[in-house]
Length: 219
Length: 305
Figure 1 (cartoon, helix red, strand yellow):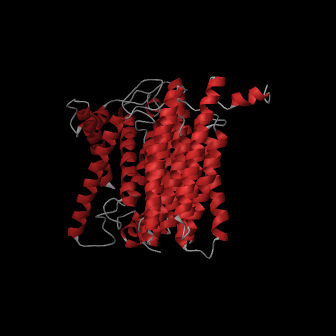
Figure 2 (cartoon, chains in turn blue, green):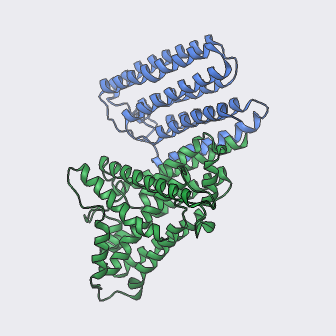
Figure 3 (cartoon, helix red, strand yellow):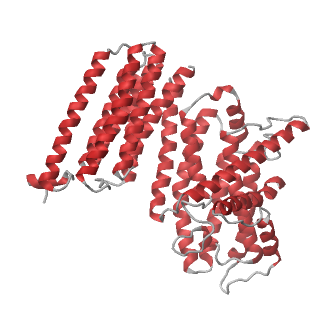
């Protein structure tokens, strides 16, 4: 186990840490900064995989991650938050402490699940997949634990970061898949953006609890 | 042992000097804490009428516990007098005992400030100690021991490699050290504002030589934490085992340099941030606990493969 494993492990570990930092944030702009940080770490991680696997097309994937996920999307979300003129503070469903504990439990769970079933694989790919699953689970947790629709979008993008990490850890991921994933994310992003503005127009808030009240689910 | 005792007030003086310079004040000399201690030792002790024996003995016990803990840390060489018992868990236990006594003494006289300070201190401690133990656990998993000299030896060897867990453990350790020493984001050591003080509130009733003991113990604790961080994470220049005299001088020089750098960094850090609300402190320490937990979890990945 040499330096190649250690660097891959460090980058993936830092991505998990960035995911947990998102759970910790209670304001919107820092949340977006952490998202950008996570995507930049993803780009570094993919670049390192490209170096390890000697696969030039992964460098393109890394460039997509850097330009698209680490620069464009956080910038667009930032503009959206600014134009929506919403509260910068995020109301979470439960407090930060329990959410963080749940996040740690999810990391432990994904390690517990993924390490045994990938026993034959190459160590770098194994740890990438295990940590990627924990990033995906943290993204899901972020989506369910926040009321604000913008932070749910952030959770969605964190899930995408985790999936990209897992996909590039496995050898032989074709470029066309990565490009199509990037475009589907873009489409989803545009759709979500339109929805956000519609929700805001109708309810004067991006708190999704308002939707529940509108459907008559809550008193 | 004598070295840590002599160096501790100097470190405190250095931090105060750095902070004063950053505020564009000239600041007191770095030797000022020694003068303060000498003055306090010469003054008479004013005791409250209802102070019990506990109040009078606590300062000496606190000082003794902290001193023993500080002398367990290998400062410039691993082969020091007490280093063979230099176990991290023992150090934490000694510091915990000292904190327990301080909290008791704070409540002993029955003033409200003492009670507030003691309850806050215990709250912070109950959050900081789990984080500390998680850090120790992850270090023990890496180095295979909780013995400080063994850990330092392992870190000096190339087997340590590049590990994200170590970085996480370092950040968690620094946060815990700041909280334990009542430095700025958690407590302000230079204020007597009743809403915010923690450590100062507990020692408000002390005077004379008792206060000198407590101040010296606080300086020692700060020195202990910085030495432990330097010994675990930056063990450059540490003399391993017995060696000739020249190596010891190099080790001493490196240790003095590390203390100076750490003191300056702490001063700059304290100047650049504001004090945190007491209710936010659990979040900060929870973050430290989470970092340490994550470090341990990631170790299972990197060691288990």
